[in-house]
Image (cartoon, rainbow, N blue to C red; front, side, top):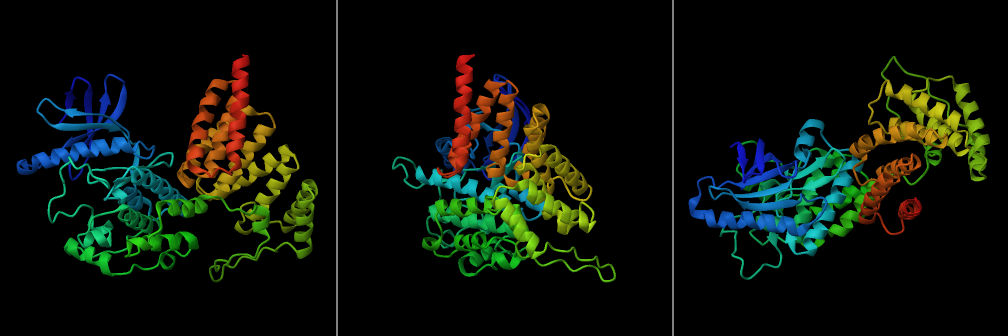
Length: 494
């Protein structure tokens, strides 16, 4: 199938096939934009054609009703000249979670939490308007290049409060959903509820954190065996398969997989726990660095490296005291002297936290030139052996960009923050506080460069996202809204 239909949509490439149809990338010739077009596929089932058409049309209605940024927008529905149904939707650029799992394995914990948060946000919204998905799974969840999760395929979704005039579209003995992600109650033939979606979310979260689904069966086994495992078996604990998982996230995942729907946490509780796991560490680098060290990896026999001397108790106390007094320059001098005395390479893994703390102290003391040099040198050394997505590499880039801004090198600072943003979105997810901070800096620097209208647009989008994600007490609301007020005054007085 290729060509143009409705004198408007030019089909470009088939993106895939689903249970109810096939999806094509197309170009909207009227609005000059790329879209996704989903066509109903009957697979020769003329006997059930009416039911299939009703389900297809319902998918369009339910998807449009949800109206959530993490659900693709429905633009139009209709029939082709040969009487085939179609839905024109937002084209999502990204990869499904199943594709990412195959390519890269388990997700970073903070990214997994961000996916759980955004998916739960969709469920909160959908369940509020009495819609359940009934088929959440990694292949029905996409992650865009900026870290936004998208929930796809409401093809088997159902209204919790059905319209009495709408026919029942699930036939007797027909079980909606996918065996590997189906809730125990659905497996037993009971109706799906909002808590069934949460069980499926638990299956998804389990897989993206551990790299494997809660239950597996031998190749060639019939799907009912997998359904029976969901009904009766208990999955291995997340903490056993992925020990670095935050205890709260591991416990949440296992509770989502409870056999009894009443024991599963609500979508709002999923959001609360996921939000906490998305946040950066609440302690500063300075406090982290002087806390008891984590266990060290054993060196290769015969190639042992000398252990890096730790700061003495007196040095630690002095740095803490000076920092508490606001005497950052003196604290930086003490730490710098200690590091120089060690004569170790810049990228020495055990000393990186100390060097990052020195950079922070130099910045806090407003010695921005030295702070920039320190961030730049450390970042350059780390990039020789670490990927650009490494947390310490990113910390150096962020610090250097802040220094450039403080030094009045606005175009350079803006360029660096704009380059940082997509990398941070990939590592932390689109709704992480670190990403919000970078978006704020971009808007602020854009305004400083004289582009107030563009900065205002950036702030408007940022404020909308922060209001949707962050608690009302978060200071980021006041910061962004304050800058927006100042920009409005500038624009009015211009």
